Image 1 (cartoon, one colour):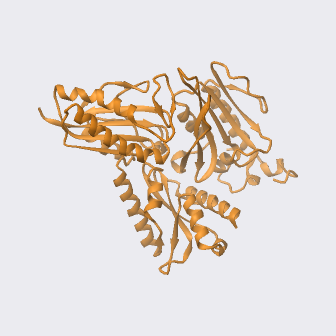
Image 2: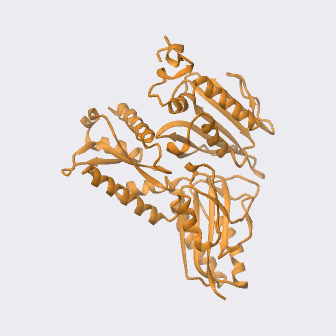
Image 3: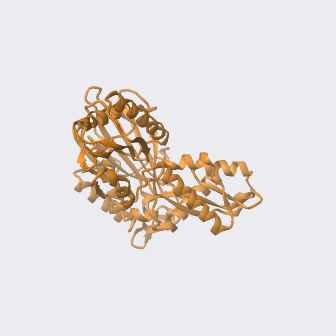
Amino acid sequence: MDFQEIILKLDRYWARQGCALLPPGAARPRPAARLCLAGAARLAPGNDGLAGLYRYRVFLSPAPAGARRAFLESLRAAGIDRSEHDLRWLPFDGPDGPEAAAGWNVLLDGQALASFLYKVSGAGSPQASAEILVSLERLALASQRRRSAGELSWAGRLTYGELHAGEGE
Amino acid sequence: MTARDAVFEILAENLPGAGVRSAVEQLKKYAAEEFARRSLPCGGLEAYGTCRRLVLYAAGVPAGPQAKALAEIFPLLLCRLEFPRALAWEPSGLRFPRPVRGLAALHGERLVAFSAAGLRSGRVTEGQEALGPRQVKLAAAEKYFKALEHASVLVQDARRLEAMRGALAAASRRMKLEIEAGEDALGENLYLAEYPVPVVSAFSHEFLALPAERLRACLRELLFFPVSDAAGRLQPYFAAFRDGISKGQRNVEDGFRAALESRLQQIK
């Protein structure tokens, strides 16, 4: 599945789950009572522990009981047959405070694929939101069975390497 | 009245391994206390844990009016569990490391009905996640372990450990090399997979130039097992466990190798 096809499939998948699609680079609006956002974005070099330049971000508030399953299903939409891969959920805890957080680093065949973080707010009647960040490069590498991002097919014959030539990729 | 076994399963999203180990001990201890407090006799209490579930199994609980106490005991046990770090996820205020997603409770064929953590107890649970969402209907408490095993989940810690030891021993024999499977390393892997499937992979020879102890530490950090020859010299192979079934082993072998080599590259 082409890199851009993966983005399109994820957009379609999360739209079907009731998410509003955000254009790349859009800032996240202030948390509303109910919100479901999804979209691909190119990140400024940061340190979220994931490989590659592109992330698919999903924000679900409140997080439905099936948020984790929806994430797993989104991998299938992107061409990953789960039974043919190992998924490891490495738990990590966020800092305590008014908005406590807990989640996982998700490894696909041992390599960082995504982070899945719940944030819980409201002392009396707690409510969790979920924030999912997926490395699109890692997803495409597994989906296309390639070893390096440069070899990935972006759209038809155009490769990721050609598209990012001169960026020191 | 004939005595029947009772089972209580807490299904949650992936739990930190250290919390599971301690929760299993607490579950057994508190169950003994609560059964005694209510003078509810039983043939034996045992608790088990995986990365996604905590299970209490009570053998030979007499049927009849006495057994009604189970519907009080089970939710109480859930509330008494303590974890190094836990959050309240829903309005009931129950604190748990990650969200609780299901409660299954049976005494023989009978449902033990109660509500906790914003959920109602039922007779349905989930099988191995790698096989896709699959509900497992539990016909009777006595069939719990078999039903789960059929859905590729080894609930009993000792069974899982035994399966892991057996798999590594078989892989050692095939390779005619020794997989270094210390008790600590096995223990760290115990709460990683509900159905541990062995994976054997290799890494580039160049990394054998690293000090052996650093190489071992790096493998251990990733929860992989070093492989050595009869003289104890490290070989460019390693073993690991994945969760699920042995489909697409090549993907996993290559992925684990890439993860290891990238880490070794950093410490070189």
